[in-house]
Image 1: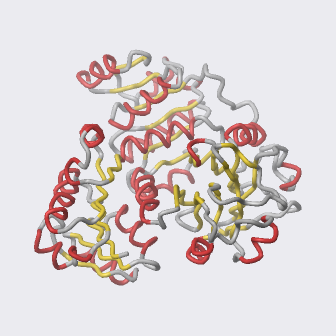
Image 2: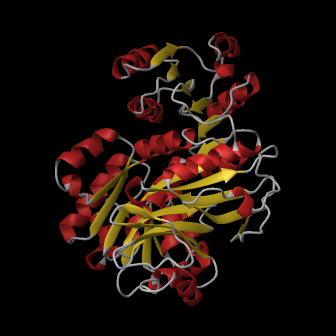
Amino acid sequence: MRIIIVGAGEVGSSIAASLATSHEVVVIDIDGERVDALTYSHDVLAIQGDGTSLATLEEAGIAEADMIIASADDDETNLVTCGTAKTIDDPFTIARVKSTDYLETWRQTERAFGVDFMVCTNLLTAEDIVRVIGLPAARDVDPFAGGAVQMAEFEIADDSPVVDQTVQEADRFDSLTFAALIRNGDVEIPRGDTVIRAGDKAVVIGSPESVQGFAVEVAPGETPSGTEDLVIIGGSNIGFHTARLLEERGLNPRLIERDHDRARALAEDLPNSVVMENDATDADFLTREHVDEADAVVAALESDEKNLLVSILAKQLGASRTVAVVENGEYVDVFETVGVDVAVNPREVTAEEITRFTRETRTENVSLIENDRAEVIEIEVDDESVLVGRPIREAVGDLPAGFVVGAITRDHEYVVPRGDTVVEPGDHVVAFVETGVLDDVTAKL
């Protein structure tokens, strides 16, 4: 496909990097330095210009484009870009927005703003945070096959009971597959006799029940019971949606917001949350409010630096787990190195969501692993798939190393993938694939 990406920030650059090997990609950005950086780092055509300009879009070849992805940091710019593109031709348009107001308008009116698909960064981030809170020790959690399958990435702590166990010993769940171990930045497809070490990151795929069960094995005593003390620091849009989603799950979070008017508005909109007006960097206040006893503290302030500060402060006071919103993707590793349990980057979450729409039409869902070192993909297979009509152990011989079948659903029912399992047309296959063999794998699936 010919794909035009408007905006060469973290989101646009990430999408361009994942598409450049298999599509004709054109990137537009008003910042000349970003354009130069992309030109040297990726096989894309980078153009300096305004993506809302008709002339710039024509220069980028909008008339021949199959898709346009508006991923600038400004909502209105992205909406105008999509609307302008539709005046020339009818490419598939994807717009990234932060405001849920635009998302609600788009959902109520077919193709509003000239947008075919809208991605709301703040809502996606809140959903990601809530999924992570629900699984102890999880660094990342994504649903597949309509929620029938989960992928989770767990960091194995020094004191975890699974340390020094083999994969076969640790995997005591019928509907769970160890897809990969990430050790010192290297991706390893484990065998039954592979030993799990402290510091490893384990990527597992399975039914939600089995993934939850494994979470208990990894971090016993931290399993959510429905009575958790959850604290959200910051009444930002992300903080609000996190609290709202937790309320929908029957939980009653506490939210700390410094601004008086914002705190009052949040209290009215969140009937099952306790909203406290105070400065969350005040250690005495946090101690009085027993934040040290919290099961999880979510830092959702508007500043990365403040999120880092309050996360470390909460951790030092004794909070069990901290999750921080990190706008700058370069800071993610720094946050987690200094003690924040999980750093969630809204731009990475957004890029992941958009990326799945650029896959082959049968690719239903995508999750990026370890800075795009690998992916977990969901594909509905047909008669042409190399997997169909024969046992998995035989079919994988025609696929490159770096591919693991993690789960199968058939007519919305979970099927445990074993060596003698025969895949049928119409099955949804959730698989772990290393990025280097992704194109080869998807062509054969």
